Structures are given as C-alpha cells and as structure tokens.
Length: 86
Image (tube, rainbow, N blue to C red; front, top):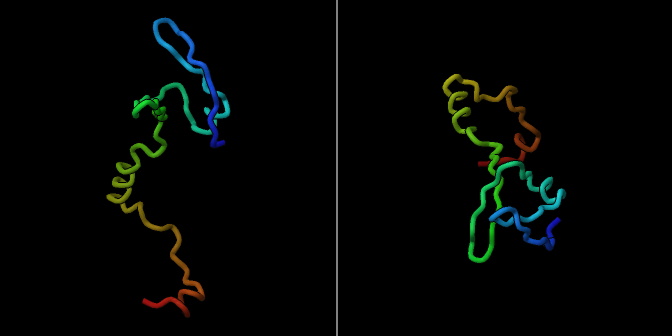
C-alpha cells in the first residue's frame, strides 16, 4: 500500500491525535511506542523497535569465540571451476 489516507486530527486532553488504520500499523510494524520527527511541515513517525539492535555486539562476541565461521564448507560449482577468472 503506497497511497495516502485522509485522517482527522482529534482532541485528546490538551493534545491532539490521529487514528492510524490497522493495515498501516501491520505494514510498518508500529507498536506501542514510536519516535516522532518534524521535517518541514511533515511529521515523520518511526518505530522505536529496531530488530537488529545490538547485533554488532553479538557478532563481535561470536568472532572472539570463533563462532563466526561457515557451518558447511563451500562447494565449487561448474561455473566456479570452468568460467570464473580473476
């Protein structure tokens, strides 16, 4: 879905809010907490969840332990043996 949907700004106490359609929430993965950023006259909403957060730390630990190697050895193909040249 790459189209705009019109939504009304509603009053919530002293603030204002908008309703985000369920389909947009599913597509973006937005959950309970988001980041808001103003860019000109636009409000940009980002998910606060970063699925790969901390991976660099875990990969560094794996490298120290030698756990960052391939499980299976690479098998050359016919193309590797006959056509590939450096």
